[in-house]
Image (cartoon, rainbow, N blue to C red; front, side):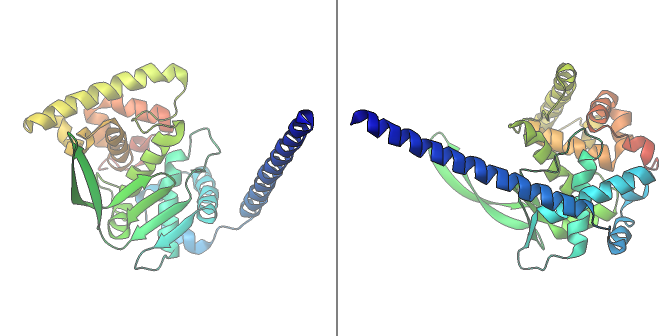
Length: 283
């Protein structure tokens, strides 16, 4: 009787395993068909007109323009865009997809932020609750954000994102939040994105050294010198440092290269793109 029980239990486990495998195969097949459909989609000329307003798209060579257009379509059709007290437009989808995909343009991966499901858009900066624990004493406070990356969702404030997308400046909230997404691709948000093993030591040495120096300057809040380019928010932690220097790399590459040549080189080697060679010298 006992042997019969274990046989039934084994049969039950095998059935569950078979169901799980079938579900996974169906999901894989469905995703493959979606990607095949997207691959055959023409790129809407209206999308291209939107992209031509951005400083970065204009300076990509034709091959990279066509490549990123395919990535944009994949991004748009595999993510959910949710507007809070606003309608989501094609412009929003295209601009967000472009800057997200620009970061991955030359990285050797088919990953189109596959773990990301949702983009939530607010029309203006949003106030969120934050609970702090200080020695067992919990306090609740409000803080203002213009972007956030958490779990499978990215939150963006469109007012800021739109302006920064069309004007070269130090900041770009879309680039910042998707740098966090890239950072998390190895399972940790620690300022170290997925790297080839041979590049790990050089990366951590250069970025950690500059982070420590920035942190020291920020604590004193004087004699900022070249670290003014990075700003105090980059001194928050290693993850924010990586996101901020990624912004500077794409938005003000000439300044970053001039003041932090080793840092610039590490970012260029990782992203496999050279914005300083691509953008005008004023950037």
